[in-house]
Image 1 (cartoon, helix red, strand yellow):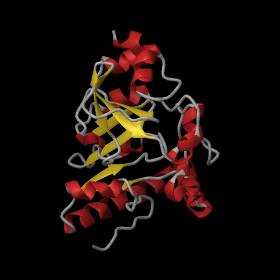
Image 2 (cartoon, helix red, strand yellow):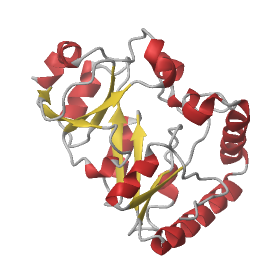
Image 3 (cartoon, rainbow, N blue to C red):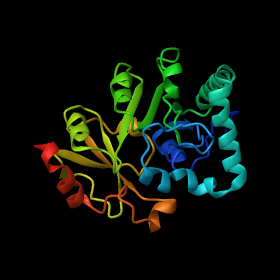
Image 4 (cartoon, rainbow, N blue to C red):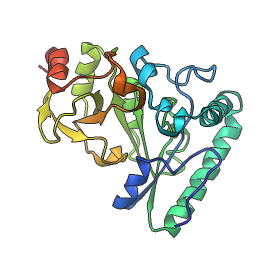
Amino acid sequence: MTRWRGSVLTYDNTKTVKGEELGYGSFIFMGSPAKESGYNACASSSAGCREVCIYYAGMGVFPNVQKARIRKTVMYFTKRREFLELVNKDIRSAIRWSKKNHLTPCFRLDGTTDLGIARYFVNEYSDIQFYDYTKVIPRLKKSSKFANWHTTYSLSEDTTSEQMNILLTSPSNIAVPFRNVPEPGRRVLGRRIASGDETDLRFLDGRNKIITLKVKGRGRKSANEFIVNNASELETRFTAAAC
């Protein structure tokens, strides 16, 4: 199979390629997070999230890769029309490539950013699946209006009990980074645990789930509170919200 290459989006991500086993081709925008580019691409990020961001894992450790991601992110802020045209061109190309290779295309347009880029495309490509993680709670409600845009809330140390109460009374899934990952199937905060590491296809998780993520990159050696030790710690932290 000839691997796909785009102008802005990428395909050969270790995790997203796992989706091929389920018949999906996942295409992702890897930009620069927070203020790495000089522009704030993650308005609701926390200090802990910024410290252990997956931006610094895998290929992200290489300076040339970081420079390319910064360049693309700057383009989003300074030449947005051109940037979106390139994304649109990549989407069309990825759809053709997926069809040729008997895969169902899907798109994660905020791989290492939290900009809500999918909003520009969900109407035009209403039969194509888009998915994201986000820390922007209002975006969960916005995306829920589109059958083809699935968003998973990304927990941080700044998530309050009030916010958790909002989340637990909604169908939105909640992704949690763990040091000691709970077994899938058990219940935490009244929700069933599902693994987020087997594939990147969050839209297949269903609803009302806690999605577990094993810490990677810088997170392996970090002691910051963004990373939850285990299921018991998560329960203790948000028990009041779950009641």
